[in-house]
Amino acid sequence: MDTTSRERWRRPGPTPQQRRTDLWIGLAVTALALVSLALARSAGVFVLGVPHSVAEQAFWAVAATLPLAWRRRWPEAVTLVISVAYILGQARSAPESQVTSGALFAAIYTLGAWGRDRRLARRLRLGVIGSMFAWLVIFYLVRGFQDVGPDAFSQAVGPVPPILAVVVNTFLINALFFGFAYLFGDTAWVAARRDQELREQAEELRRSQAQARERAVIGERVRIARELHDVVAHHVSVMGVQAAACRRVFDRNPDAARTALSAIEETARTAVDELRRMLGLLRASGPERDDRQPGGAGLDQIAGLVDRARDAGLQATVGVYGDPVPLPDSVSQAAYRIVQEAVTNTLKHARATVLDVRIRYLAQEVEVDVTDNGQGGAVPDDRGLGLIGMRERVTAHDGALEVGPRFGGGWRVRARFPVPATVAEQPA
Image 1 (cartoon, rainbow, N blue to C red):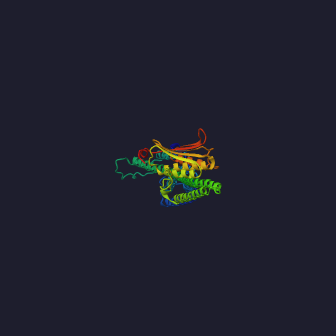
Image 2 (cartoon, helix red, strand yellow):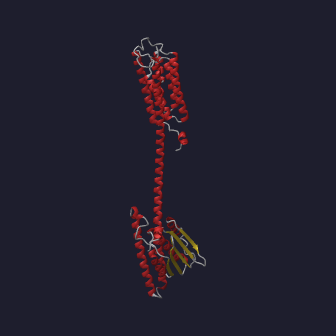
Image 3 (spheres, helix red, strand yellow):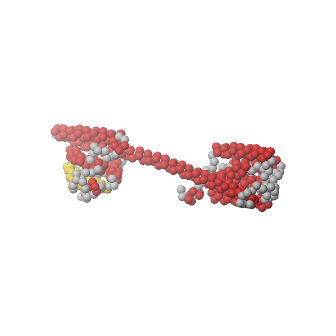
């Protein structure tokens, strides 16, 4: 919150409970002021002169204290009423000044702490304080020490003249009185503003945490969908192709049919193993859930993918170019999944006869390139999960993905993954 926003900030009004509390405080202070008035009259303490009627004295005591019952609801009006009543009461020689002085202090403090318009609250408090000092000046100029007896200062022994000492002491006490009221009010307002800021920040933090949890849930769902798609779709597609081949040659070539059935069995076992591994990762907690977990598929198992494609009837080849380097498990697995998805789509959609898989180890990158001679073999399934999964894996590693028809016919899927320099310099 900048300075302008802080000046424009409005403190929320008092709650119903705070209003009820103020009402009881106002009534209690008013009762205390009346008790103090009775005691002052009983003791004959009439510092400001001979008072007027009892009713008038009680009126000024009530007028200077009862407005505290609404001090936080209307702090500006309460401060004005109490300050005017206080000055007029003293001008009319009201003997009660102790409780009413405290009420004036509370009014100035409340205006500083609860005033909604900061500029108005500041000007009003300064105006009230200035009026009080002006009243002191008028009091000493008009009334002075005319009621003081000749022997009042007979015991004075200080270096300052007695009358000047009384005047200076009175002004110092009032300066401290009003200064503390002004300072405490501003301090309370700043504390309330900071408390509001903290509550807003806490609420924003709670919203951010809720959004983070929601993103984590969505990310976990995407991860599960991607893993299921990669593991299940590939192996089921391979088994489907092999089962179709087995059905076609079952009567004419029993040996080829048995070979296809053996391939289906092996593919099913591989699918079950990968599903178990995937479920183990999803159930694990902590860093074990990361794709970097060892034991997953990687580039070293690309040959198995090509063999299964070859068993399904494709003329499949695999080539490795460049000097192999040890890759991070996450990069190796992401590259494997992209090749797996490309091979799956070739088997399902391309009507291809030739499949070529190439792995290139470049200076700062590793590239996987899958091409076929079919009719759009890498087109994703109806919901686009294949292409989405490939893009997510490449993006997660700051790589690049190219998917589309290639010159001369067929389809190409090519993905590049950056390799850290420290890794690229290490031999495989």
